[in-house]
Length: 231
Image (cartoon, rainbow, N blue to C red; front, top):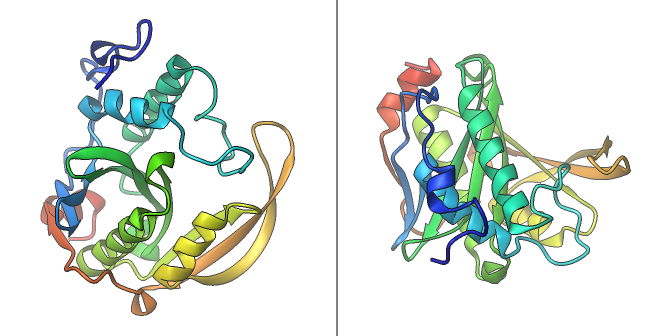
């Protein structure tokens, strides 16, 4: 892997001393041969930054409220690391976000995230993701989303899954449709650029998941169940 430019080398976004981290790690979700999701660790950040820096969406497609994936490689690396550090620092049983590094053939190709508020009571989560532009159109987006919702339904008792996509982001829409989501309204959001953007919402119930063809295997579920307050 190439070094990140300037001060954003592998060592510069390495684990920080005394940084609070969740004590429960969902070690792995395997969704097909040599493809898996692992809860992202600080040691993953340099490779995540390099993957994201090469591009994650087609030109002209609006996909994120915050333009974390634009700018120089240094700016993308900083935005990514700061976001991941923040989600880990704010983690609690009442509100959490877990970001999974997606690997294919051992390489990180994207991130699949899941978040919830008051999960022990609501059993409802929201999902979001990004995928290296070079890996678009290969089915990874559908498989990684299907693996995550299957794992959270089977091992953590999630009952409802929410997601959204913006006008023009047809890839995200198709992934949602393939996994079984149905339309759930729309609303207007003000993005980082100050402009209003229409977001289409979609919802999926656990009993309607279009499951992946390969079994979804989960390692480390018990520790995470305790940490999330559902055991």
